[in-house]
Image (cartoon, rainbow, N blue to C red; front, side, top):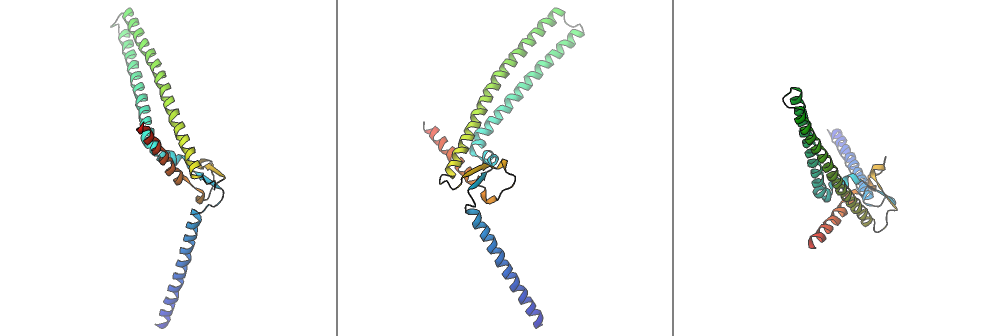
Length: 194
């Protein structure tokens, strides 16, 4: 019985010392993660953009507007194609005269041209809105990175999309996202006070 007790006591002592060693290693790696590992850092810009308040509000609204507009164009085009098909069927069945068929066909063609011109104008407007939005996102990202690195502790900050492998201690995405949202909130507050 004493031998079993001694073996159990020895095993418990070993487990405690292993647990303490693991805890020390975890604490050391956590400390290293908060320290500057080198003069490089990376930002996952896809995460910053997707999780930013700017994208969640204005970006989502712009995306929805673009999708609705494209769906509207598709419905109108299908409607015109349906009318052209029905007209052709009526003509082939000799339910309308050639002259009436030509007149109606010309009307459908004019409406199709008007639709095409409107689609081009609206597409150009949407493209401009998307470009402005993208430029705002890029500007806020650049300003956020510059603010996070204001003390110049990093000599280089790169986009994570170009990385093949990196130590996660170099990831400053969360800090950049927080600063991005802060800058956006300030921009929004300034705009509301005008």
